[in-house]
Length: 459
Image (cartoon, rainbow, N blue to C red):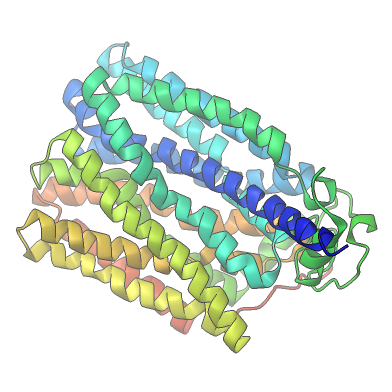
């Protein structure tokens, strides 16, 4: 009997952290497919004679459709569940990434049009991914672990350039930019099989124990999103009757959206996420181009150099989640646990502006690394979403949050493109990024107020 306890405990730990590992891996792939254009952008622009403004619009193509598809993606998640909607997303975004490589074999005009269209289709396919991540974290992790779990999958956005920026740069320089898209597409298609095999809701997972279900339910996990109240303490979580997957929120879809948009706390969170993502999209789109155009590096050098700030962002992202959960255990206050790392991180990320006043490549990379570390430290938005989303509409709430946050993917590449073309340098662009960090910090200080779960009013 004494030997059974550690075995059960090991199984319990292995199942939910295996789910988290898969979320991390798929999200790394997600961001690698978004960011591949930042490495391939220089040779593409040279081949087709693309100006900075035109490149800004191409870099933003993903986000136009990604933002537009957030609400439909969230509705699909709430209606049909996470596993298969997400699996379809991985398949299609990988397929459309692969097809982008073929655009290079067309004439200049046709290639740019096809390339732009494929980037938009990637955006549609990726739309359910982050709301899906939040749903799975809400289902699998108790509140006391949710900050770390959300930080892990969110930190994948920083790890993606660490792993794939050097690889993409090497493939681009050695074989041509087309083969970078081919490679990433094939990796993603293989990932679909891994997802289908390993991802299940807690109540449906073949390896989960009743002990784990009881533990996570007592800790505030929803077990099946919409199935049980977040404060459930029952010891029969496996036998609880879930709400039908397609059950609509009490107020209806549009009524729910109206309530979410009318909540001041959520609006503050949305504004902050947009501003935080300005830095994300600067690094995903223009940063390697900045290193080539303004700092005189080769594409290969830029690919390897870009991985250094990304590594710091990854460390900051993980550390932010650890600190947040530690603060929650120590203080019992979501306000302190979530807001303190966000505010400190945004304050640190403003050092990006100092890059305008140094010439040394080492100092520039050091300042960029510090800025991205701060951005990672403060990137707790998805933990806040898990803390605040109505249990009846977790997918829709996450989709709204992601929609507002990723409007930065539309505006940032375009604004920076105009700033670079008008000034001939990236100096004003870096100031623009730093100011957005200040606005994000101000939103959490002045708009958000108390962090708490939203209760929907019935129609």
